[in-house]
Amino acid sequence: MTALFWAAVRFQAAHVWRSVNDLMVLVTLPLFTVAFLAVLVESDRRDLAPYAIVGSGAMSLWSMAVNISGGTIEGDRRNGVLEAAVATPAPLVVVLLGRITAVTVISQIGLVESALVAWVGFGITIEVHHPLVFLLTVVCNTVAVVGTATALAGVFVLGRWALTLKSSLTYPFYVLGGAVVPVAFLPEWLQPLTRVVFLSWSAELLRDCLSPAAVRNVPARLAVLLVLGAVAFAVGVWVIERIMRRLRALGTVGYA
Image 1: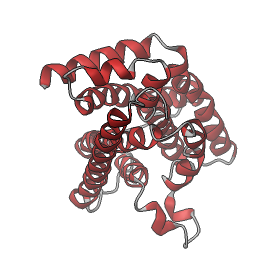
Image 2: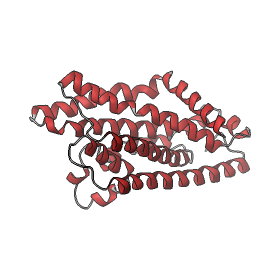
Image 3: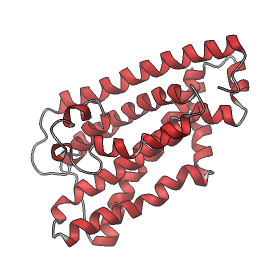
């Protein structure tokens, strides 16, 4: 299983680096960062630069999770290779896990990219005051993204409305995940809903790591990230296995 997982990681990494469409999120990310930072600089609020940098990175992470990772199975079916994948003895979930992990790791470049744009374009340098917590947050956030993308992959394969669903899952989750504005600034009736979106936890933790003040409740907040990722992954595995059994029985693997 380990060899299969890493083979899937290498395959998807090579595919992403050769696909202009898959990398478009990272290409357009600097434009969002510039827009956010320009507003803050013109408002004389350079102290809020971490919000723009973390927000831009979170947007790229979620966008790649939805459009690439979540659409892995749906894309394979559209390209006519899902039948061959299902016919092999290799567990589909393990292959999917490796491919999603590769995309998730690559998408972490977005955070570094945003920091570079802030430094080169605006002379704003970001200091990580709590490197250990920052690293743990990135790792736990990766787990949460992989789990969520697995659940999305199962949902997207249900029908040909996947493209419409992908489009509707981007900007609303930028808001619910605190990527555009911190959750504390959202309406009170909306804030409880953000607690089930893993991005809201990871974005807050990352911002706290860029502040000199001590980061509070680190173990509990990291645990929430891991739990949200684990629950989403379990749901995704259950949905995918159930769908695959049904598609094999009906002989409709190649179409909805």
